[in-house]
Image (cartoon, rainbow, N blue to C red):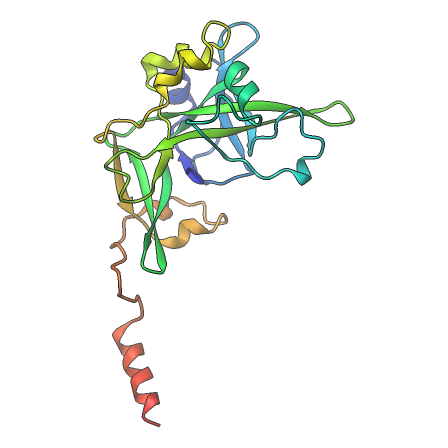
Length: 245
């Protein structure tokens, strides 16, 4: 699963990495959450790549009322080509989702430890994405999208069983060109990235709150240890004294 990610690369860096011209300015985003606008790269009508905004939470074109449809932020790579919610997008509207990294949560006892997961050598990573357009009764369109996920590689499997599909720059054309390449032609791209690609760092649970959008949420912290509490010794001592009263 991928439920939060970050994009802090400058627009000019993104434009160069994806060969996109005229990327609109945007601020660094450290805690991108579902339902928020996300940047997606696709093939435009002129046949060139373009960067557009879409709501994170895919709404298929055949949905009658988005309010009655579940929020879909991820599509499973193993089944996306055949699922009604993703089938058309896999065939006609594949995208790339630029990111600086993503967050994932590891269960430790009864608690969850957030991790900031980024490319080991820094820079931008491209997640496989899907996009759809939903038309309101009034005729206006809402663009929406999701991130394609696959099973986690061995390095990240200790944190979570799923991870985003990473598309290598050498495969950008094949993934984006839906006219020349169908779902079967890109199936080999939907595999876990190499174990050495990402670094995972434990961070505080401040990332859990969407309102926390500052760079400090990526600051490393000591990982949670099973069976231990964050409560300070003095506080536990006071509790023990109260039990004697």
